[in-house]
Length: 158
Image 1 (cartoon, helix red, strand yellow):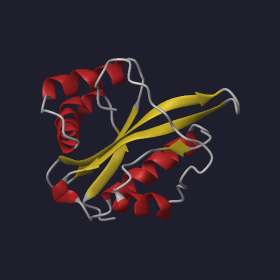
Image 2 (cartoon, rainbow, N blue to C red):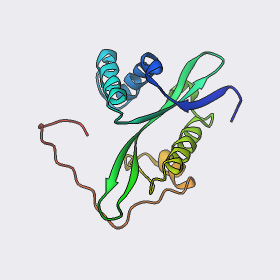
Image 3 (cartoon, rainbow, N blue to C red):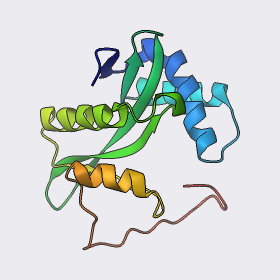
Image 4 (cartoon, one colour):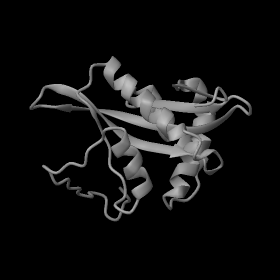
């Protein structure tokens, strides 16, 4: 990883910059651009301490090159915390520079720091590039459980 990039846990002071890249992430997944709504959503996550966001900043431009967002969950069976790695995005202009790897490393270090049981994520079945990255990092495909989803609001994207 080049000294050009800096990874750190985001704070509320990073909100404006994160809202912009978060909006780009949502556009990538077919959503309409809405930076104001992205800002409000992220502000609520910060305010209620409902997620942990790591960002990678390009030190030469000050631009956020990528981010990942983690959500805590708990298991009643193991009585331990895990983290859902819900979002991971790298700007197209910064891809293939090791930023996704840096974000995965930060997520893993944080999970170890808080003594979480592990990290869980999901990705599109056809996203083979991401699958290879995750598998290189020790993530294994769940062969024991099917995951289901029930929309209670009608046709709302997951």
